[in-house]
Length: 103
Image 1 (cartoon, rainbow, N blue to C red):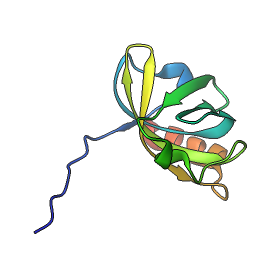
Image 2: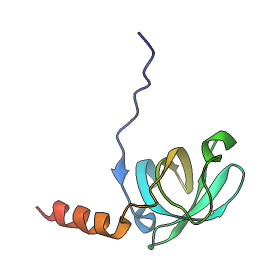
Image 3: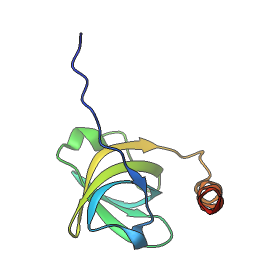
C-alpha cells in the first residue's frame, strides 16, 4: 500500500485576517511571481507566499487566480500547494461562505 501523507485541516482565510499560526486556504490573484515565492492579492490585502521548491510554481504566472494551502507561522506564509482557478468566481465564493457561516 502506498504511503499517504495526512494533511492538517485548513481554515478559509482572508489575507487581512490571517492567524498568527495555522493552516489556511487563500484565494486570490498573483501580482508578482519570483522563483520560489509570489505575492497574492485577495482584495483585502497582499501577502508573500514562500515555497520550498521552484517546481511547485513552474506552471503559475503573474495575473492568474489561484487557490493556495499555506502554513502561517508568525508573519510568514509557507505554501504547501497551489492550484490555478482562473474560471472560478472568487467574489461569489466569498459571499456564499459568509452567508453559510451565518446559519
